[in-house]
Image 1: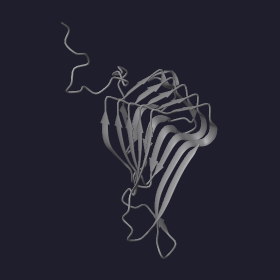
Image 2 (image 1 turned 90 degrees about the vertical axis):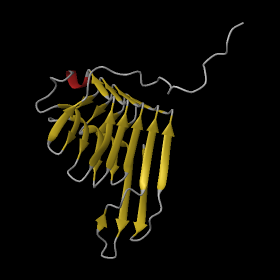
Image 3 (image 1 turned 45 degrees about the vertical axis):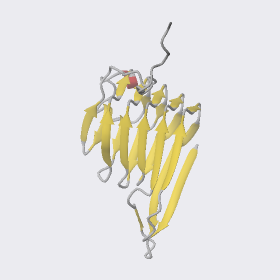
Length: 189
């Protein structure tokens, strides 16, 4: 389980970035595999979310056979960027990714396959009323909770603002390299 937390004094605008590239998480039995919190401590001891003082970047990372009671990733007031990430054969209580307390999320080529979210009304990604999906491109979900006809009230995609935006079922090759300006091989003579 990975946890990151940063407490800021009111005017502190410093930022922290955490990058997890080409890693694999498998078989963890915990509440949450990754929890990231970005919280400001006020003089009155109230906790309020800052303007994303922490960014978590996931790239080419896999989460397989995780068994979590809440969500695999819980983002509280931070910024999450997910690119070419695979969530496969996981079991979660609430969702695979949860954003709360003014968190923001960007997802590109993120794939959900064969996951089971056990609570009724499940969703792969859940954003509370204060959080925002800033970007969602080429994400897909296949065979999650039995497909789109899973449990009552199921959302095979992003649940935001009381509405479900389903992912497609056609997955783009998430491992494909980004095209480069140079050729892959030299000329032949």
